[in-house]
Length: 298
Image 1 (cartoon, helix red, strand yellow):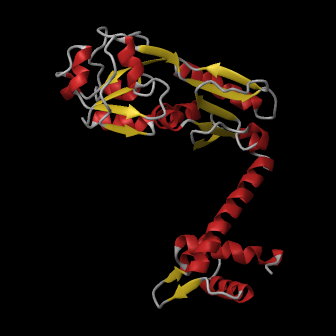
Image 2 (cartoon, rainbow, N blue to C red; image 1 turned 90 degrees about the horizontal axis):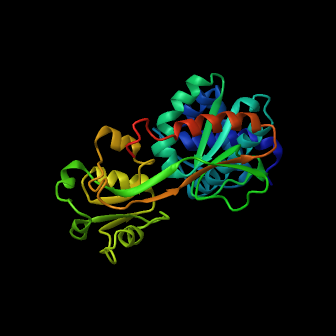
Image 3 (tube, rainbow, N blue to C red; image 1 turned 90 degrees about the vertical axis):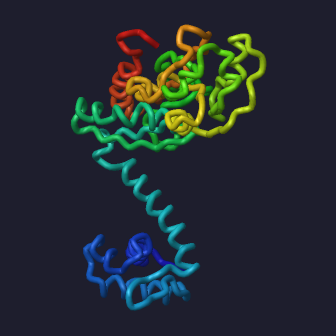
């Protein structure tokens, strides 16, 4: 049975397995290569199984070693999170959860400005389609797609109105002069979008849309496909702002068709807690960033 005294050996094993080298692990952990080799050999004896296949040039994980690495990596990640939660520097660490496409298209390009305006604050971002669970203390704020259901203990801020309209590369736009022209164009579907092509076609009295030529489970992937000329995406002007401003994407039916408008993204954070001040700083900054362009040309 593995005792707590072997925790240091597990740390050495995790480093060597992740880096694929005893020497690299020694450099990372500031140990001698022989100390790393001896620690792993002892761990193998204690466990009764080989963790590495050794050659004169490198080391390769065995099946047992790979299994142990998977669990060790998860364990050390949980330990790191626990240390972060009780660290004296926690007050300057904003742990942010974010919808993936908003993180890629809106948040990431603007984070350098937030860090310049707020020196000393560190931001850690995790992205997924799930809502953050604030009860476990892993996150301080969440940018979600769709309004959160459980709001009793949360401050929820709508970020901005989004206009959902057909977007395509400039080369393709020359073929689209009226909404009916979309019947003959490859349509790109965003699977998780609340507004779909059927909604847009209905709003413009076009009947049912043709089947999409391709579909993606993330808006940023659909936008990238449109930039590459693969078809017409039905997407948000908020998520596509960079591409629209750079001219990589255009709205071929702007002012010709009826577009769908809605509040797509919300910022949520707990009403109480030690990180409320930091979350409020971020909320004030993000709401300013999400204001429409001054030209009002959306």
